[in-house]
Structures are given as structure tokens and as C-alpha cells.
Length: 146
Image 1 (tube, rainbow, N blue to C red):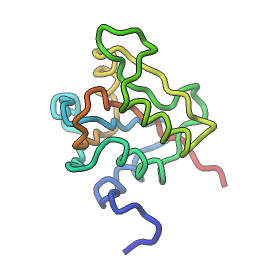
Image 2: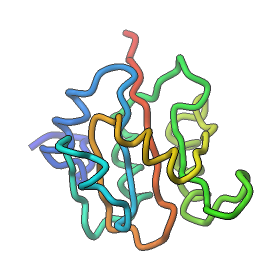
Image 3: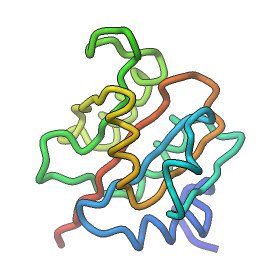
């Protein structure tokens, strides 16, 4: 047993988060995301029964975000809408992000297929049970300075 570790952070996910290096991305997505084809052999971690905001809260409790980029978190844009449109799931994620790291709270956004291309370069994919569409995010790992 470990103290102060969110129980959603299973051994496989903790290992991936620990193994990632500075600048590596992890993809946190809803249940509709094409994880197997995007990951192409990279780790896929399933958190079925957990929504994306619960998973984000757990992950951001241990993952430092990159402070050397303007937007260490990127969301998938809603198809056919302006870049500024953010569905409820993305607004909730933004609130969690601000609470976890108010200095790194601004999210970038990518068009759907550009998001897929960026996700292909990620270290791993975390698939949640999130039922709402556009619950898809890239998180760039930072460093911890002692």
C-alpha cells in the first residue's frame, strides 16, 4: 500500500507516469477515442467506469505539467465549431486543471485529425469510461525542481 496516492492510479498507470520523460505526452481520452489504432503498440491503460475528469484529477495529483511550453494541455476541438467552443466536459477539465496548477491552466486546442496525429506521438493512451464526446486531452509532462 502507498499513502496519499489516488486509488485510480493503478500500478500500470503509475509506472507509465514514472517512466515518461520531460516533454513526453500522455493522452487522456473518452471511451469513443480510437485508442488501439492511435497507440499502435504503445501502452493503453483502461480506466473503465471512471470519467475523464476523475482520471484527470488523479493524474494531475502526481504529474507535473511542462512549464517550458505555453500550453502543456491540449484539447480536441469540436468538429464544425469555432475554436473557442468548449463542451461541458472540457469546461470541467479546465476547472480541474486550474485547481491543480493555476500557473499552467491555459489549454491549447487542435482540430480533430491534428489531435489524432499528435496523439500518435504520445507515450501512452489512457482510455476512460467518459461517455461525453470531446473528452480528449494531451498532457505534456514537466519536471520537478527540488
